[in-house]
Length: 204
Image 1 (spheres, rainbow, N blue to C red):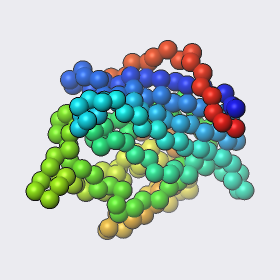
Image 2 (tube, rainbow, N blue to C red):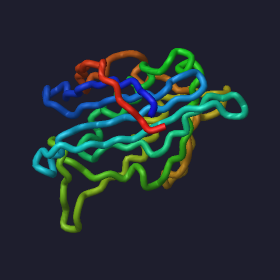
Image 3 (cartoon, rainbow, N blue to C red):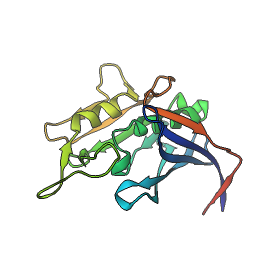
């Protein structure tokens, strides 16, 4: 078993001061060569009468054979009721802030983009899915998805784009990781820091 450092927050909607979710970052052995972070969201699900749900995902970084420090981003997602509220960029901003300084300075984000990963359900102001005669109403947000990743990347090499995408939404991104909020507070989110003296355990 390996110990990890857990950093929890509670997030509120800045305009309505309503609870959105709790977010916990759990770091396992973070160093300048490798590390892993698990991001766990605990939130009330509007479409389930406010029942509490959990949504967890992990990202890792490592040093490759060319001595580049990489985070190969797998699918990063949020529950439908928490999308388009500024939570995604807040998560990546805080993740950047909690990385060791030697990782912040070198980390390269890379990942693929799919034509299907930006098609999301429409939701009302409470986060409930909007329905049509054929089922949930969907919306294509390829441009928004591309801006989301581009904000946190800067070129690794001069004159090289950080993101490329075809007309259907398929592509990839690669760039030096930077804070998408440029160390400023997110205007759409109020964040409350919770006690961080809790320790979690992970399997070796």
